[in-house]
Each structure stands twice: as C-alpha cells, then as structure tokens.
Length: 155
Image (cartoon, rainbow, N blue to C red):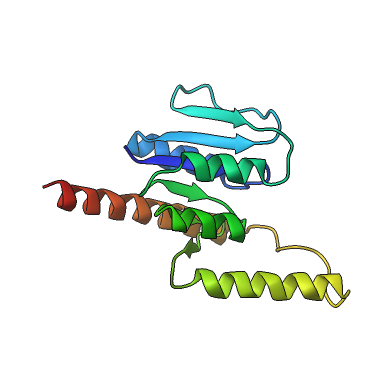
C-alpha cells in the first residue's frame, strides 16, 4: 500500500500533504526529532527519533518501500530514498529523480562551499503560494502515476 513519509522537522507543506493524502486515503508518517502537533486522524502518525545526526533520515530509509513517497528538502536523503526505489518530492514541488539527483547534489555541494567561504548567506527562500500550488499538483500527479503503474503491473 502506498505510504507517504515526511521529513517533518522543517517541512513547510505538511498541511498540503494531509489534504492530498486524505483525498486518496493514504497513510502518512511524519518523522521528526521532537514532538509536534499533528491532526487527530488515525492515518497520520508521528515517529519521533533520537536526536542523532541523520536519525530521521536513517529511520525513513529503513522503513520506506518501493513506490512509497518521501517529502523532503534534504538532497542526500532524497538520493538515499531513490536508491530504495521510492518516489521523492521537495516542498517546492520539484520531484527528485535518478535523472536530476546528481545535479541536485552537485548544486547543494557548490552552495555549501560558497556559504562556507562567505560568498553567500542564508538558505532557500521561503515558499510562495505558487510553490505550494505546484507541490499540491506534483504530489497529486505522483500518486496517480504510482497507482497507474501498480494497476498495470498487478493486472
């Protein structure tokens, strides 16, 4: 059964995930290092992990199955989940794929070096309304695509 995992500590699109998952009747697991408020629906669970480096990432990778969906802005986590044959989408609606993950990793590394050298400051810009709209559309399309593929392969 298709499941959505959310790298939840700093995820700005949790309400959008709930909305789309609720429409399709999908389970959602938020993985975080600390407690947070979540809707009181039995299909939404919160998994709290230890505060170790990459503990949430490790938990997600250990529990994700092929064709599950992972919502994260963490590019190394996205890469690890793709190796597990999961589908991965960022909060801005950008799907991570085998075709674009290498470029994403290289860009992340370059920006990290520029920040370390003091050439640029800050992180990604805040999400805008159109980013949230694109996320909703891409998540919906990703779910439909997985369901079509599952229906074809199980027929």
